[in-house]
Every structure is written in C-alpha cells, then in structure tokens.
Length: 223
Ligand code: ADP
Ligand code: MG
Image (tube, rainbow, N blue to C red; front, side):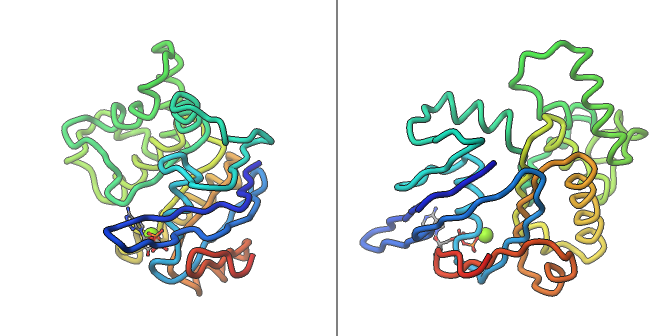
C-alpha cells in the first residue's frame, strides 16, 4: 500500500548538505508490522516524516494505495495526514488542561463529524486501550502509563491505515516501553493497522519476529 521509489531528501545547513534519504526504494504491505533500525543519523526519522507527509521528499515518488503523490497539493497532504496516518510523538503533544476524552477526540478535530460519531469513536479507542474509566480525568491527574495510552488513543481514533512510531519513546523506562510495544502490537494485529516502528534496540526488534529494515547513511541496507 505504501511504496517509496528512489526517494531523495537532503538538508542544507550553511554550506553543508546532508543526504538524509539517498535513493530509498522500499514497499510496505497492508497490515504489516515493520521494525526500522539503524544508527543515529541514518535517516529513520526523515523516512517516517516523509511517509507521514510531515516533510516533503526532493526527488522520487511516494505511492499511496497505487496513487502517486508527485502532484499532491498541500490540501492533498492535509487530507492524507488526517485520514491515513497516525503518529506517536515522544512528548505525545497532549494537552494537560484537557481531560482524557478531549485529548483523544483531538485526533478527530479537523473532521466535520457528528458528535455521536466522535463519541463512539473515542469510546471504542479507549475501550481497546483499557482507559475507558479515566475519560473524565484531567491529563495532569493520570499516570505516565495512562498518558501513553491516551497518546495511542489519539493516534488510532481517526482509524488510520498506518501508525508511525519513532524511537524517541524508547528512551523511557523499560516498563513503559514494554507496555507501549504490547499495545502497538495489538493495534497491528487486532485493528489491522500497518505499523512502522523505529527502534534502536536490535534485540527487541529480533524478538518480535517481524520484518526488520536496516538503514545506514540514508540508505536501506537490508530489508
Ligand atoms: P535518525 O532518525 O536515523 O537518527 P534523521 O532522519 O533524524 O536520522 O537524520 C538523518 C540526517 O539528516 C542526519 O545527518 C541529520 O543530522 C540530518 N537532518 C535531519 N533533520 C534535519 C534538519 N531539519 N536540518 C538539517 N539536517 C537534518
Ligand atoms: Mg530519529
């Protein structure tokens, strides 16, 4: 469903050019779980951002469900980001003064959906993640483990086709990481959402028994 064809992306800082993605060609199937590994600076985050439509590639093509994105306008990228991808960011971008329900519902904010539909989506995402009983709590009144689930709830409430998870959360403590990974594996297997999971933990990636993609110097070295 997702194909990257000869994708190039570089960053210029002063006179310095970094080839963050250097001729990347790779495909991801529907409902696949893929662990993405590689040293720091190898282009993992850039690839995720390009796939998620947060950043634009310079050359090549990203094909989504058979459709080229070469001529995508900003509105097409917006629609793609809102309808097809879910992200989990390191700090989760949650709003501390809002309650759990409102934070999850934010994932649907840009859509013109009836209240009842929003309500049922928030409830089913919360129930899937086991946080139905804390919907009215303020974010500052819940635990880190719960906050992590709220972030996942927000990412899946829009029923994305792909969930993008960057390694940053991996810097958290071991228990949090394990819980997060467990939830993400369920999101993949039970909801059928494709997951691209960037990690810096080789052993963990191997233990998952899933496809592993290695990156180095902006290239895919093995997949
Ligand atoms: P990874 O996630 O594997 O650590 P990144 O995709 O973040 O790698 O970075 C790939 C390369 O691109 C690195 O050399 C990094 O310094 C550079 N890079 C990433 N983002 C930017 C940016 N916004 N401006 C300049 N250079 C960047
Ligand atoms: Mg990174």
